[in-house]
Image (tube, rainbow, N blue to C red):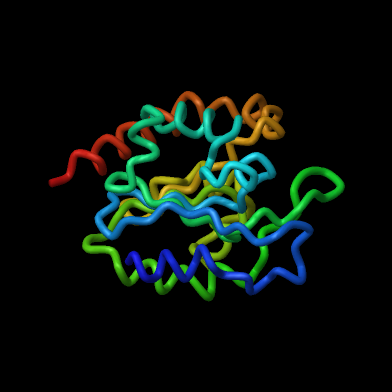
Length: 192
């Protein structure tokens, strides 16, 4: 997978559509137990080159019930967003992930995995792409029925600070989904 990783980090396919130089941000290992598929790197992640190195990442690690050291251990977690580069700023947050990355790179990455890792689908872009016709009537309903997608997928909302209102309106997420998520993560990480 090292050759593929090298190709990905040199990718400049969308350079004409990005406000910044392309900087694909991924973390890959063929033996990872969990794959995290989010949206696209934010500005801070673009600047540091470290995936989920922002407030969203802190919240995500809290939801998963893991340490930062565990999160950044590629033997445990691979990270491949829907768009590998920061797409730039939009009117109400970052722009949507570029559409070129997932169809080009995801199949090539997934074929390298030694076993079937748990895949976390964070946000509607990842959920729509991977669940297709099984995607329910919006993100809320999809996340609410997370158990229907196990053991392959676990859909989650985006842990962005912008989603605080969603968390308040949907208290079942903290009460029911996060404990199930943490149990599922620990089970995935403890597999031989």
